[in-house]
Image (cartoon, rainbow, N blue to C red; front, side, top):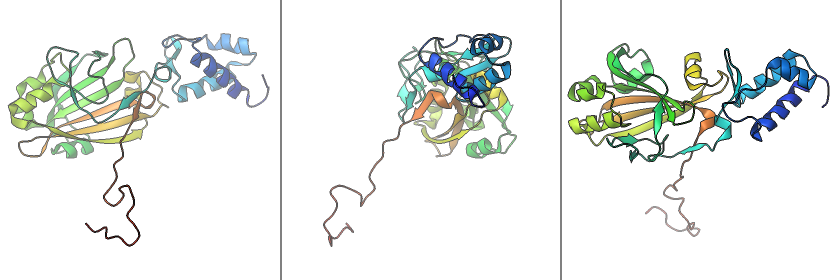
Length: 272
């Protein structure tokens, strides 16, 4: 292996190849820094720089008291996120399955579920929900993912006070994902329609800890606004935070009027 300033890059490349070849399975812990340094014939700082590269790529995650753990994100097929909302058929209670999940897939909770009145301090989310910043709103907090995998997403839902009053069951913990949305619809707000806004950003430390990712790995933030059919106003706002290496967006492009095939003949009237 070449010596010099690029040694840590070479070590990172070799460790990356060994991880991707399956030498260390997802969830496995890499050898200790001291053992890696001895094996590569370098000091610990050089190994630490190599590990930092892999952590920034999302391949590994430094866990306090445990060591450097191989992540699941890069070792599995990414989930294609489309735009289809489906009935959830994995549970008996009904409810909805939104694009992050498969309607056939069972997800589990990684932290205790939270259903309570909280102050909505985020000005952006408050504006989207149509309430003043700091208003007390029903808040549903979840950290979920497919069974046998680490957390896939954090989702925080904020329900407009009129919806919480008309559908008090949204404060419960139904077994079926999306069941609370069905309750809002049954209370007179259905069919709810949705609009999503997507952006990439860096996670907060709390988000990184919940998702078991390094703070250097970007996340996809998806904010979904649900609109009541009763009055056309927002009835709920949900924010998803997902590690960027575990989901990819697929969009089907449509041709605008005037861009249809075949192209019109030169001089043809295209006004109709």
